[in-house]
Image 1: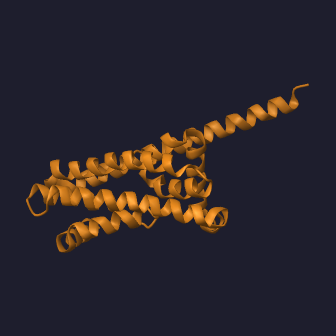
Image 2: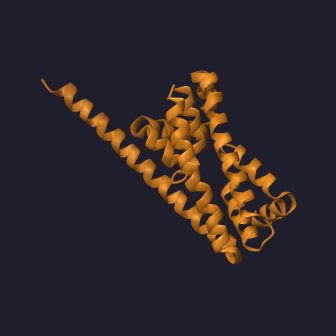
Image 3: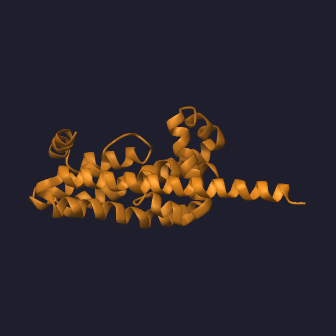
Length: 202
């Protein structure tokens, strides 16, 4: 996978980084983080311009998030129901819904970088549930700054070992998502238990 990504970035430069960032924010399985790491590495070697890579990745990410939000805003609940037909997508949407309901704008912010695998699903949920576009756009824009500069910066700093950095970052993100899901499930179970106790109380 890393060899393919490197060859694509070598061939198409910032264009493929923009496209991958945009499409991954619409839930397409594209290794955008590795693309940005590779872009940062090529900046370190002088083959690409720093501002070109950063702006391409940032513009693609923000436009992708906004597109996902707007599609869900227009599609509403029927779109979410269609997406939820597949069990894996249904689970991702449930986690995204829990994050938005419990954390609101802060959940949107964290979904862009700290919990990036949930990001596309948060976009859909926020749009379909009528979450304020102004709040969504503000926190999305702020969060994507961290995601883009973080990965491009890591690629620049560790240009000689991109594959290792990609594996480490993937494991960290996976762990954070698992912890978040576990916490959300714990809170959900606690809420149900409280409701049952109240129902039994005289």
